[in-house]
Image 1 (cartoon, rainbow, N blue to C red):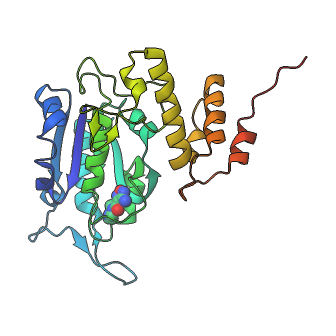
Image 2: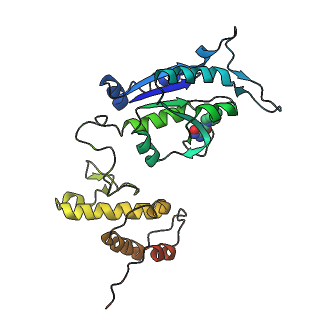
Image 3: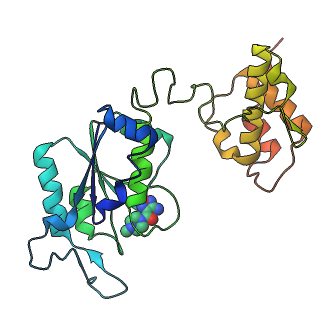
Length: 268
Ligand code: 4HQ
């Protein structure tokens, strides 16, 4: 898969992609990452990439022409390249979007600086706008890195042969269960006995329950997306009976949850 990054700061991308898993993926030729300096597509003497906003106001706006030339240069090489503008106004990025993007063969990530790009850039050159979250960055570069990371690890071979990138569909849209490694006892805090039991079905059940409970307490919004089996619903009833502490993060009441997930009682 190819990634092109349009940016005014190409040096920001050198080390993040050289290390670890993505570094290996590049070495193996599984992904190609190319940075393109928007400034190289200016035609004026001073290589100006920004200008003051029409109508007045704070800051500077990125000019349309250099970005247009850069985009058209990429598109002339590969007309099917999918272009993304990173902005807090875009679609909130999540695992589902990462999965969709991982099926494309060529992504172009446009990183804005200052107050962003001239509106005509988005109209004419962005297939999609994506936000990595409701906060304001100094530029789209870190957002582009987040997307490249999340998409790359879904590509075959990137995580190594024995691991599947997409958590078991069984655990999709649930938070992860707690993990432990040695030592058994750290400053008096011990590993749950069931994990040492060698009883694989008991371990699976414990992990499932922990994942459900953790999701219920921290991110109840995710449970509405999850596919809960009838065994899950039993586990949820146990969890609710134990009445896990409301740590102020609950967003759905127990009653609302039970109503939504009520088990149909067979008649007769
Ligand atoms: N910015 N998700 C402003 C972001 C951002 C985000 C990128 C800051 C665009 C002009 N991008 N520039 N959040 O905060 O993607």
